[in-house]
Length: 348
Ligand SMILES: [Fe+2]
Figure (cartoon, protein in one colour):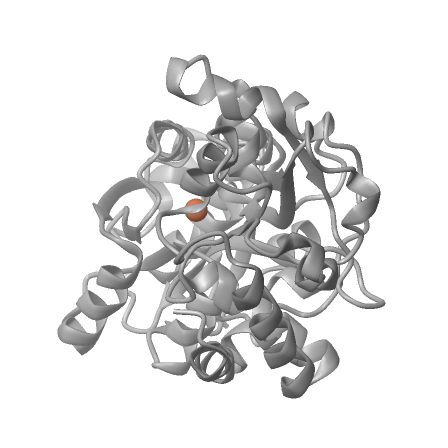
């Protein structure tokens, strides 16, 4: 039983219910009203959300920002002394690794179970998806017909030789994409796909997803794989250096064999050595609430995980799509296999 009854008024507030009376607040024991968050997400929108959480609940949020991998190393070094209550990071693969390394603990929450689809959270409650992204194919509309790219496997067709732009396999997004292929089609098929991409590469993998999109704008290749929010942000951008890419990029939601488009999450979990567990759960619940889901959708061009919340106009313009329903727990479990297959395939 992780939730303490004295926190119920706070949880009720976080869920938009009527505020508790002054008396109810005074009656709460003198528990520390704070929650320490380790996050790689350094968006202004997130800061505003944490402030809104404090406003609603009186729970102070202390944020420690760190690079994705740094954050896990920090937790490893701190061990049982870690002040972290909530870990927020991108990619179910990374959250799965955090769980495997013993940095998280299972919690139960009816609110989180109701708000977040089962395949977007750890079956054991160690982490919860808070925003969703699709890993899509972006293409040059002036050179490619979207009918040519219905499946991730289509990118291995020899007609794309010298035209596929991709980032390094060291990045967890590609590792998770390949882990999903391993889960569905087995390691041999996944390795054959990775080899096929290597054969078609326009250049050595470098840069992030946005760099690949900009490279399409420069004519350095015609197709790439990118997370949907990078394309959403590109489409919303007024920056002069982004306009060439913005003008030519189209999006397809590829199938993965018989399955839908690979989706992934940015999410959070309660830290193994958390000292503020009820507050940590309350924060995660708040982040899954309607108002925050709406804010995630607009602010960072991510898909809400909660059903019924619309995507941003930029994402809605790409159309709807069939999602792969794979439980994302597989991405952490198969991460090491994916890394090994990339290495064998020569995708560095
Ligand atoms: Fe990202």
